[in-house]
Structure formats: structure tokens, C-alpha cells
Length: 455
Image 1 (tube, rainbow, N blue to C red):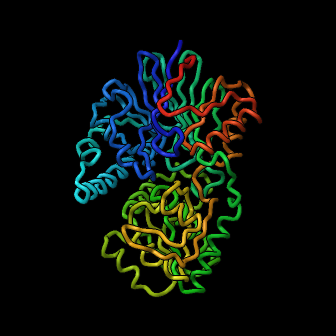
Image 2: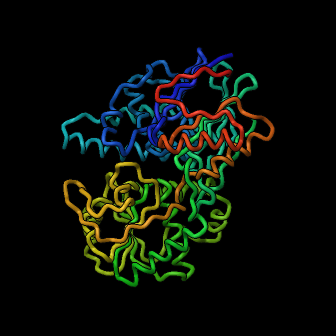
Image 3: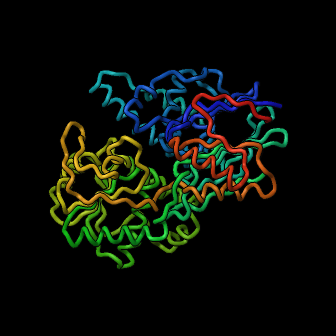
């Protein structure tokens, strides 16, 4: 048997994941995400797909980040009518993410005179096509192919996709979780597969600050209190925000830091946090035990949720020390930009970056030491301290990715590992490490590559 793997997104780039497995009688996709961060991203996302959406039978979704789900309603708009599968939390979170993205696109369409990628009707139709699976629940997809989802440990409900046919297996890792994370359990290690399509966001570096990340966060909170300043945390609304809230909750409730006025300034993050609160069985056991003991892990003294724009604008009126957590995590949109424009020129401000910053983005420029940036047409002089905690990354680092492969090759060496979903440097670095250290036949495919495999 032979099938074709198509690499139509997430190649040479962290974002835009979109892969196809075509057996000849069954065409299935794994993820259908937005390209993000690139100055040409909007134009790229609006382009036609490299395949006919009407001919796709199944879409499998690894998790609910926009760079893995963001073009699903467009896929439906362009004719897809097949089945969609994911875990329950991924579907619930995707519905929220789609709705939020549509509101942003509608606003930008009015401002820039262009059409949104999709409509509310496209979202509704996509969700009507969507079924859910529990981890380790096997389902037949057709042409002898079955799917099983295993825990990827990345965000709530994230999964690795295991496809089996005729005794052979192809694994799509999606995004692999960092270990340890505040809320998520460690990823499961795939076993006995012929092919793997894996991520490589941090394929060329190590998260050196994992062990001390809480201590670093504590340091910046204490410094903010001492200076009566402002701690700004641009955080992705999905997972990073909930992890940070959990850490602050524990620091305050344990008495390690005094209570401090903390604003969660993101309607999206507030809605996502509600899903986390209702899906505790997907959190790691230690967190479940803490909740069972009576701790509301997303609530602590001083925390406020700012739903409206008016409430957001009033944050600046509070003159005492404060923490502002707002989206987006790469500072390319959302309410965080208003706070950056207002506070970055104050030397008592700390901008704390806790996630990946895409090349060319405002967050990356500031991380690399820029003293002046343009935000929404405003010239912002940076006098604030800009700090980074890489230990909060939701992505596995180089060593963890190598261990993910190493842990699965003791019984069977895979025929090929395809390294994707990373900047070119990271993907190529990890590819070479897998070859040199493990003897694995690893390759970094090119955009739109179509590779025949024995499956």
C-alpha cells in the first residue's frame, strides 16, 4: 500500500499547520491553521488552498490554537463537507476562538475594506460537522484507516494523531508540550510507528529557565510592587494565560508575594478560562488534587476580569502597582498594544514575555533590544525593562523533542521522521540532531512537498 503525505502549511514556519494524508480512496487533513506574525500573513491566509476542499473526507484537529484551526471555517466556506474530529475541549475552545477571530476580521474589514476569511454561517456549519473523541478511543475513518488520539501535553485537550492502516502507523504530533507545565500533564510517547510528522518550534534551543520560572515571575512581581510600577504580560489567551494565573494564585495564596491588583484584560482569555474550569479532568493530577482540596485556581485576592473596552481603558487610572495580562502573546494585536503604548515609556514598567515571539513581530523586536517601535502608528520609546521567561513555553524544547523520538524507537526504528512547524533554522537543526544522535531518517520537507510513503 502506498499513500501520499502533503505538506501544505507549517513548513519552514511555526504557524499555518496543514498536512494531508491521501491513500487514494481517503483524503484526510491534519490541522488547518492560520499563518501568523508574517507581514504578508493576511494575504497568504486568503489564498485558495493547494487542494480541492470538496475532495477532503476527514479533518483531524490536534488542538485549538489559531495556527492549527484558524482556517477551518474557510475550508468549509470553500466546499469541505467531511467529518471533523478532535477532543471535547478542543471543539469547545475552537468555537470560542472562531467567534473571536471573526469579530476581529469584521473590524479589520471595515477599516481596510476587505472581506473576512469566513462568516458566522461558516463557523456554524464547521461545528455541525465536528465530532469528538476521548483519548485512546479508536475510530474508523474509511479505507482501512483508523485514528486514535493521545495526550500531547501542550494545552487543554491537545492531542497527537495516530493513524493506523494494515498494521502500519503514522503519527502527527501537533504541538508537543513542555515538561513540566503548570497545568498540563507530560506528553505521551508514541510507540511503534513507521512515520512521524513532528513540530520543531524550539528544535534548536533548550528551555533553561523551566526550573526557576516561578522564582523569576516572583522576582518581577516583587520588583513591580517595590517600584509601584506596572508588570505587563502579553499572554496567549489559550493556555499561557491560565498557567500564569495559576502561578500567581499559588504565589499569593501561599504568602510568597503580597496581593497585587491583577487585571485579566481579555474577553477571549476569560471565556477560555471558563472552559478550563469546567474541564478539570484534562489537567494534570496534582492540579486536580489542588482543586479537589477547595482551591479555585483561577481566582485570588486582587484579580479583576475586564470584559469591556471601557473597563480596559480605566486600568491606567489605578496608580498603584499592578499586573496586566492581556492578549495577544506576540503583541501583534489585541488590547495589549494599548497598554504597551501607555506604559512602555515608563522606566517603572516591566514587559514580561512568556511565549514564542515570531521573527519580525513587535514582541520579537522588543525582545531583541529595540528601544523604539511603532505600535498602531504610534512612535513608542521603550524605557521599560523587557524580560523573558522561556520556561513558560507550551512547546517542548530541543532535548524534549529528541527524547520524544528516542522514547519511541526502542522497539521499532521509524522509516522516516518529517520535521515541521518551526523556523527553518530550528527544523534543520533538529533534523540533523535526530540523524546524528539517534540514527533516525529525519528530513525537513519543503512547502507543498508531496511525499509517497508505505502506508
